[in-house]
Structures are given as C-alpha cells and as structure tokens.
Length: 338
Image 1 (cartoon, one colour):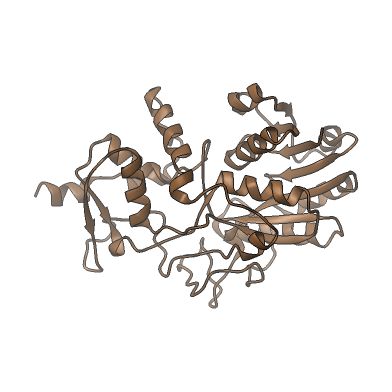
Image 2 (image 1 turned 60 degrees about the vertical axis):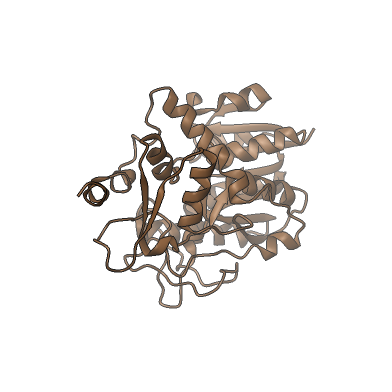
C-alpha cells in the first residue's frame, strides 16, 4: 500500500486530498497541532492523525520515518519552512507544496492583496510574473505572497521532484474562510433580494478543494519539479455564484444589479475583481488531470457543511471579522424598506 503524508492536513485542502487518496487505496497520515481538528470522517475512513509541529525538524524526521510515496505540505509558508523540509525529501518519491495565486502580479506589480486591485487581462499562466521572494511576516498582506515565492524557489531549486500547486479562492468542507457564507446566510435569513456591485460581473477564479485533490493524485504518479495552477474548470462571476447557491437551497430572491452610481459598500462581495481573475489550467490538463467537477457541481459540499454547522447552533464564521462587512444589511434595508 502506498503511503502519503499530509503536513497540516486538517484544513480544507488537506481534508479533500486525504479523502481522495484513501478512496484510491492509499495509507494516509495527517499531521497537525491539535487532534480535535482532525475531521471525524477522515479518521473513520482510516486516516491516521499524528500530532506534530511543522517547524520542528525532529518531529518532521519522526513523521516521515523511512519515507513516503507522496508528501503534501499544506503549511509551507516561508523559505525557512521549505529549507527545513529539504533534508527529508530524499526519501520521498513525489512531493507537493500547496501555494497560492496570491504570488502573481499584474503589469503594474499589483497582486490580490495590494491596496490597488490588480488587472489581469488574460488567464494567468504558471510562468506569469510573481512578487519578489521575501521574508518578514508571512501573515501580512504584503508578506504572504512574497514568502510563498521564497518557499517555492527553495523547493524548486533543490533538485527534488516537487510540484508547486497554486490554488485560487478555495471552497470545500472545512474551509477556513467559506466566502459563500455571505449568500448562504442571506438565504437562511430569508432576504428578499441580493445586491451585487458592478452588475455582479466581478470574478475571482474559484478552486474546489476536491479539484486540487484530483490534481495532487495525478502528480503523485508523475514526480517532477513544476508549477501548476489549480482552479475550477469554469470561472463563475459573483452573480453566477449567488444564483448557484440560491438554486441549491431552493431560494428565490430579486437580483439587484448595481452600477457605479450605487452607494459605496452596497453590493460588495469577495469576488469583485474586474476584469475577472482567471487562472489557466492548461498545464494541469496536459498532464492528464481530470477535474472532479465544475463550481456548480462541487460547491454543494461546502454549502451542506455550512448548513450542518449552522443547524447545530454554531456560527461557522464567528471567528472571522472578514464577514462583518459582507453581512451588514443596513444599506440594503434602506432600499428595501425606505
């Protein structure tokens, strides 16, 4: 039986990758700091949880033991993280580092975390320009992408068969920031209308965790040093996302498509990039990767998980102030009930 190790595998991507590999007959070990974060369905399916600190070299050596057929690093954020991993890769057949679209910059040097929104006029390919490699605080808007680039470079320059996978806006069960909640919550609150800035045409390519999992399984048997984008085969805009969610939940609302004259903040949503940001997945498809499904086919996993969480009386995003703005109905109510 082939063995896979997923470092930091209790999050949305690790969860999907582990599930896919288990169904394909792999033995899967998942590491993390806190055992209670291990998804129950993975444990019941046979995944083994190993409490381990990613930044501890001795812990890494213990986890990898005599080696692995596949290593997936979901928590490699900095060059230091990458270099800590290098001594252990000689006993790994194929390795994957999960990176991010946040590394890409447009012609003006702007990226998705810039104060000025980037403008990507065409689908972004893996050889597109990126932020300069850097260090500092990887948890900051400027430091995140720069730190990821530095980590990518350290692994790709190592001579080991490491595939860097750059995902976009990830969705799936266990998502740390399930952006679609802004529409799901509106349905649960029985909102009569959905307001969308810029006619709902803004877009930021979605990435189903199960699609990234399918890509990881494909590259597991094709070791090599490469960069691959991971995104859904379609690229829905905000209006299409809202329609997909409402349709899945059997909800009807009036669509209020706003233009530039709308009050500031009304109709804001997390996908409002214009032109839409789209990742090219041609390189992945040329390797024989087959997506698990389109956005509409895969987003129900996250919606149903959110509903189940809410049904338990738990706010699935209570920890994240990000949603406060998107769930503030006051501007909408002024128009609905003047």
